[in-house]
Image 1 (cartoon, rainbow, N blue to C red):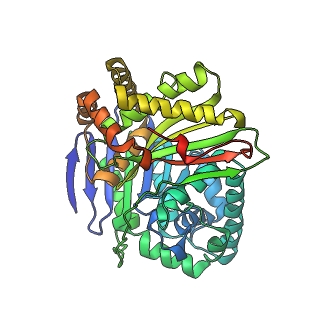
Image 2 (tube, one colour; image 1 turned 60 degrees about the horizontal axis):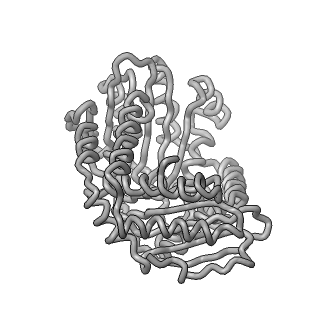
Image 3 (tube, rainbow, N blue to C red; image 1 turned 60 degrees about the vertical axis):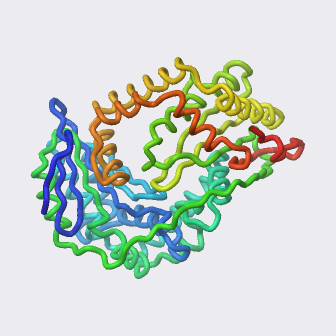
Length: 426
């Protein structure tokens, strides 16, 4: 095993490839533990669609030592803060506890991830739960539109498929198939164990070695297809909705691109907060929407700028026109020095305040290992933000804010609205 230290982060890698990261925080009584696998929905072949998310659920259904109820009781006794998630690029399990419960918390999650029992009756019950989760998504317009949009934005690529899978694919995950994928992909070299708070690095390394050290590396490498974005124009009618929802997007720098700091700042200026351009123009000045904003969604090999809003159907065209006008203004006039400094101040505050929370520190360390394979010191991040210039923001806008790049999707009672691609002209 090899060890090293990056800023506040202590790092050890076991011989089977498992990475252990700890961030010791003085003067706190909390401890956050994270177990993150470098496996997500975009790594799944079509016949395995939804399996990562299914496994995220299935490990809660019992182990050789614990029943489903045992796991539920124990997480409540520890504080009830055990959470799990699946994205397109990772599957994770996190818990925040009082520092004297670190060993018990580690034992609980490690047991779930090393000895899941995957019984047929348990998996059948969880299949039903996940199918109900899919129905719940269909009942939330923003989430339904997001899935419609992603499918069209990334055609023929796993990034465009819903993370949950489909009822048909989920029903196919019997004990044999679930165990096969788990043993092949949820392996030590794909696992990052992170602890932050009042923790000792040696204790976390010892626990990781105890539970996972004897597990061999996987015998198959994950291959991830490069994602290529399309530029669809989609209008879906739903007469039962009071509001119409829309998404406007364009490609953007990836999470590994050196321009990611500038891209984040630009997205924040356009729609990241209450002082942002579209918030002020669409909500405050004209009262057209309650929900409006923009964000930079950065994957490891690509990025997506998204601008979104929800408004009355008869006001959607006006809200869309105002959104495009703000993007056009960035292209023609750039951003002001005041806007850039405000966005930098917001970013700085978010980073520095997060340093007080053990869960946020654990998440940050894990994300950096996942994306860069190294720890980036806070000072380096803040310096990179400070170095961003108005000229860099303008360069990004001119590269990505092009009429032919834009994708659009809308959902609502839109039969009477005249929406066409011709409205999206920069």
